Amino acid sequence: MIQPTMPALGDVIERFDHVSVAVRDIRAALPLVELMAGQFRDGGNNQSGEFRWVQFDLPGAGKLEMIEPLDHQDTNNFLVRFLDANGDGIHHVTLKVTSIEAAIECARGLGMEVVGVDLSYESWKEAFIHPKSANGVLVQIAEWIDQPASGRKLEDVIGEDP
Image (cartoon, rainbow, N blue to C red; front, top):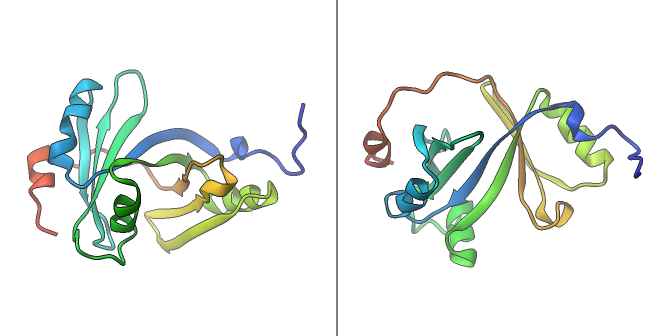
């Protein structure tokens, strides 16, 4: 058995939360949600105004998230760059952690490259484990307090102005 030099992230992981799929058009990608029997949960434009997100509860456990850029012409937008390079597809997986600082420290202690650290919002703190450190998978580690769904309707979210 491999003995890590520091405790595994399991000590701070609350749960596996969702898989996020980058798409150019959420509306056009909805057949995937229907295939997976997803039920709309919530969504909106992110705080920085770069993208729209929509989440669906999946049967059994977990969520599927779709993210689309708000300005498809903005080549400085991380999501536009991703879609231009890769097309629609899985962007990241998200782990909900109890302490973002402890999760970052643990990941770095395990030799992983942590990027995109953003602790500027009290309600949402995140960091990413670079795909080169995670077998080609971008792993988002995030700390937030769960809130009930907003009660918005899917049509309201995907029809929202940027």
